[in-house]
Amino acid sequence: MLSFDDFKISNLLRNAISDLGYKKPRPIQSKSFPVILSGKDMVGIAQTGTGKTFAYMLPILQMLPFSKEKHPRVLVLVPTRELVVQVVAEVEKFGKYSSIKVLGIYGGTNMNRQKEALTEGADIIVATPGRLYDLILTRALKLKTIKKLVIDEVDVMLDLGFRFQLTNIMDLLPKRRQNIMFSATMTSNVDKLINEYFIGPVKVTVALSGTPLDNISQTCYSVPNFYTKVNLLVDILRNNELYNKVLVFVSNKKSADRLFNALDEFYGSETCIIHSNKTQNYRLRSIKQFDEGKNRILVTTDVMARGLDLDKISHVINFDTPQYPENYMHRIGRTGRAEEKGASLLFFTENEKQYKEGIEDLMNIKIPEIVLPDHIEIATRLTPAETPKIIELNNPTKRNSSEEGSDFHVKKDKNKRTNQGGSYKRIIEKKYKKAKTKGDKNYNKRNKRK
Image (cartoon, rainbow, N blue to C red; front, side):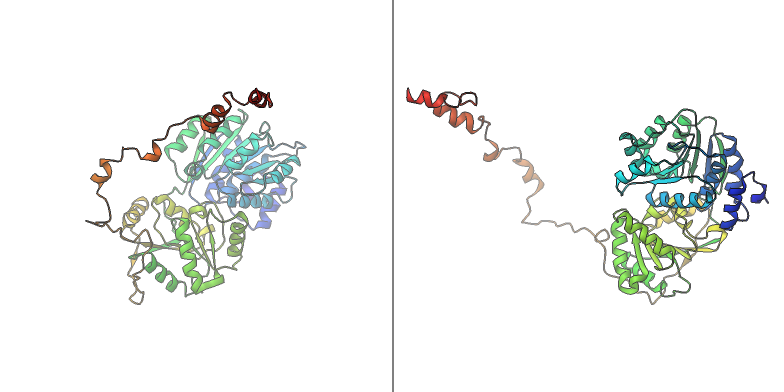
């Protein structure tokens, strides 16, 4: 088994690693280090929670000498604002004893402040594609000095619709550069990006998406509807010693707000929420409070499923079953990190059963099912999405479709009006016989006297 002592790194980096308490490199770090150090293009395929940030930053920091250059030499692109903040913090920890300067750029904050920060110079830029592209268009950021490009969680970026910005940024970068990409899944879009921009990339594969982590226990419940799920979740969370740090995933923002309001009645200040409609400060504050243990329960959408490194999450609860099986893998990867034990619970309705089966097919295992306890109340209250649509037959107050279609093409009186040139032509010209012009204000007066 390799140790960090076997890596050819400077004493400054070695001291920073020692301070962080890292003893042995993880598989993705051991495999990536020599490839990135060689200067070759690299594609890393590894699921979330495998230590990808350290895998690319360690060799990059080793190769980044001191420079008085103000323009950045390394560009790291990530999909979310929270991930920008996290990567910047990690780089600052790794470069603790060096003079490396790192700057985070993301949307939701004042662009002028970021422009001012860029004028002070930075060695490494960590950014989301959208805001970075905006700064490039305003010429606040120049990319001519970039030597290394890292694209982390590229599959998420493409899912979020950043392909346009991503390809334009890559077209603007210097041709001679090292490309490093990390992704949890290999899709056709990711393959296309690699074929277009990478030169003979070395592929490093560790813990493919769909490979269940052995240190995460998985169970599931069959539940009839949303509010019965709420009743089950409220009951489960009563055991605050076992469920001491819980991440609850829902499918969309409305469901997140609905669930947060329901949990607030029982757990109040123990609960916090994150989704894309929340302000950046609110999101960062929620993450900080959850990470520090001030909040025990965090309700979120899939914006939190990738990249973020939160310590010692005891349980991930999939309140809604994700439609795409890969998202389930990313969600449960939030627990059981750094080889610690973790647990995952999945709630699924009859409509979501097909999604659960897709997850099981991907992992090639059957998730053990727990029977819904007898004391859990089956809710009769339904969400708008669950409420069946009422079709009214033979309603005398409604016109038949045949009636609506019989005369809809006939114009109403108000629509038969024609354009007569406005009041100027219809009234003024008729009154004065000649159009009144600004060039001769007294013309009409003189003409009238005659």
